[in-house]
Length: 224
Image: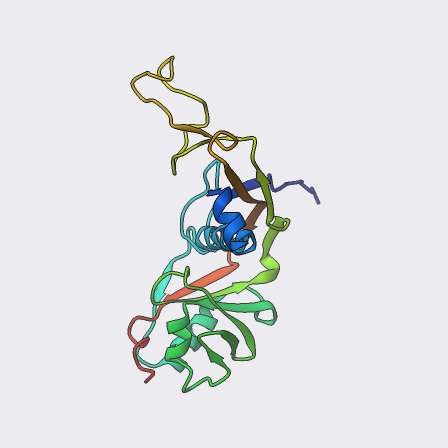
């Protein structure tokens, strides 16, 4: 038997915010801002992880990439049974993922699940607002490789920040700062500001058959 090796190259997710020193001193709000930064990074990860986007040099493929979404019927119990029958993973390691409103719509039949996670058929049910709309996902956690650390937050007063949500990554374009596409660089020291950055290195890969999903729009509105 021939064995081959494969690896997960790290991908970086980061968020930066610039805050005036006066605001930080007046409100002691650095901890709150750091919390918002961590949440922004976590939300970006959820959105990418639960997407159907193909892999790019900057981002791994979402776990729904290449997964055919089946159609559920009007009966939640029968639909979930059909989803289980279509699932190629190990049910002993199964995890359900959906938006909170999807789990709320079956809470009458399955009272252990709701808008804040829970259990569906004794399997963990993870509620995420970044899951696809009206979609119930089942995943074999043992068939998804994940490599990553924790979100780290750092602060700097000595940086020059390109004040753009889509930075080009260099001080100027077009050969000079006054070129056809000037870049707005702001010195933290000169403006009495502090730059806060949150970042994490992470990557993942799902094996074929690790994930199944169903369109449940026919019964997501059945719960009172």
